[in-house]
Image (tube, rainbow, N blue to C red; front, side, top):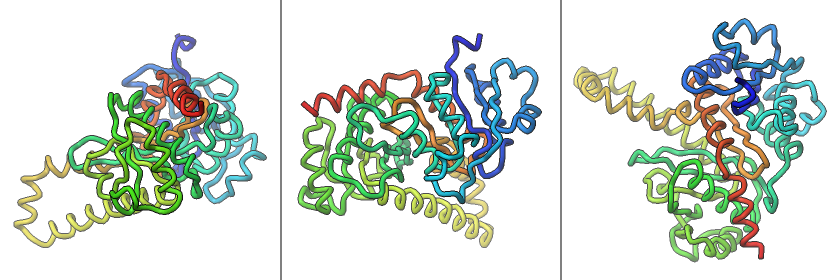
Length: 333
């Protein structure tokens, strides 16, 4: 049975809270969809967490080390017994079609790029993430942390990869791709984004410069920026979402009328939480490497891990990497 399923390598030890939420997320995913989970980590800690009726879907790979969040990403190549190194190797060797890790994101990126390798014509892989919008759809933003310094051609490649992801994974037939800038006018931006604008104009999907508020209004499907801006954007958005939740809670406590309103609007608040909740997306794909790599938050809950696995299964079953290579090859002529 296992031989006919997609195999996903899962770093069971990398998250902030140990193997429990990761293994629970794997089990929750298996309740919905059958796949072959390869759990990498301390088998003595992992195995007791698996209910007997799910063990037929799981293989264990022993790892004696955990690469901690406080270590430098450059050291991970020396840590061949770490759970993330062994999980990446399973994909490199063709034993698994994807890897999911809630561990050190820099280490995961480094290993994926150096051990699995980049797609043909891709200079820099990029981390893509989904952002909520006011109309319920999602906006794909990349890069959000892999590359703090970018050239115009890197941003162009991100646009090609983002367009491919939106078509193959998000199932948007004619996605709109925008370049994040300090104004919508063609003349706005710094030297890098101005050069990138000219290059992206070759894409039929490119709609020009977009401003920060358009990330959340659903007017475009894919937004391109360098990893420095993208990472600040991502963390600022998370901070604003948490602040709004706290402000609402504090104001509800102060007024009985507000409390009544909150009760009446319970469904709306629940819907809002769903839209801004990281757990709903699970993880961020690293686009531009030869196989599927999903980078999850260190504080991932079982729900986040489950959704990261679903992302990995969808990615592994798609033609996205071929689409990216074909598109970049077309523009290289």
